[in-house]
Image (tube, rainbow, N blue to C red; front, top):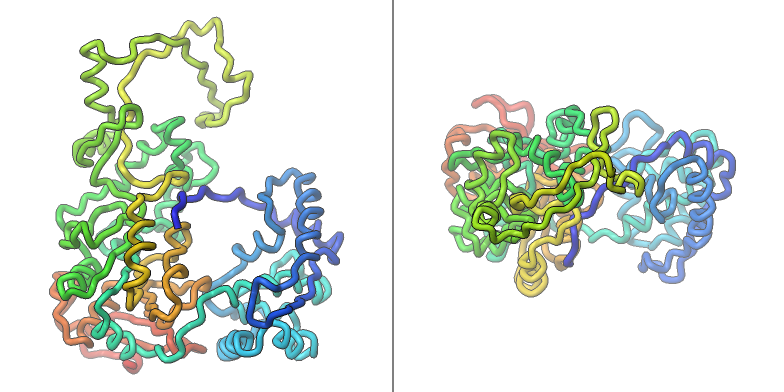
Length: 510
């Protein structure tokens, strides 16, 4: 499970892809051949792999930069959706549930024979049963052109953990909470948004969306947290760090209080937090119960000498928009103990007012006429948050593999879309027979949870506590809070929570 936070992929030009596929639709055709109905690894997709190389070469000729993956493997992530479609010819939610269950019951070979091969449904329409929107670049092509995507959709569905069919209702969720003694809680930015801290990926309000509007001279807002870019030019990170610096003054959300309650009741095994705000400490979650997967602002480390300090010692510099420097390095330089060698400084080039991160060999050559030199400087302090490209803390792997996997009896995921590896692999790594509950505003399609509770995290956990007979005292939870709960169409285990005015209900509680 040990790994680094991955960096993002280059964006793709789908209009170019469309032209390539239209020129040679045969490369989109794949037949599903299975030797073992229940083993996804035995799907024979070799023709698709052969097509990949030629398509890659042709698309590269068009000036695109692609990773060594198949065309459809890249496409499928961009056209997957977590809700059913109402703007294309799609199966109904009820049909989708039946198709997914049928695939698991009879295996992919028989499933394909009874559906697409028999003419009962087109491959294009069947894609929607697995959350795949038929891509525009295949529009107008023969149905066989969709076989490649369908193969990957079936493979992806069978690779998921199978939902435990006996857990569906809110009462089931409450019963699981009450009986469990070793709960793993995995949290994301969604549990802090009620405190005014933005999440990362929400459209318009998310941090990445806001960063994209600032004109930082980077191709992707996620590069703000890229360790190579930080080392090359820390001003990019520190120009926005003051906006993400936690300033909660001891506050915590009802969801943090819920996790602390599980701990105080002897039910919390581990809270794996992806958040860097360190608010868990405000709620009283003990360090031995907490793994901060992406680090936090609680401490900071010099990138030159490794000196570590309490995070709040550099907050003043961050809030002022300055790059914090290492006090130990400064003292050494003042005492003459630093590296006093003077080196010719590499020339700096700017283009269109943007910072240049990647320089050519010509740009890296010293300019004999610039007369500038590198003067020894104190090291840059970096908050101990895990940037993309950095290793996750050793504690993450050690605790998950050697401790929690054998003890966990319930998994609760709150306020995260589970899009960033390797934390996104925690849930699939845990034993599949352990019940799993998902709490967030929007569902996810790449993991099959047993019960989905959708809405405001604070509202949901407060309602769960009320039904369990537990007091969740928090100033943000009204004692007479009324919650409307409805079952989402097409599902038996997906419930939508909405806080309403006291005394009014628009639906029935389940």
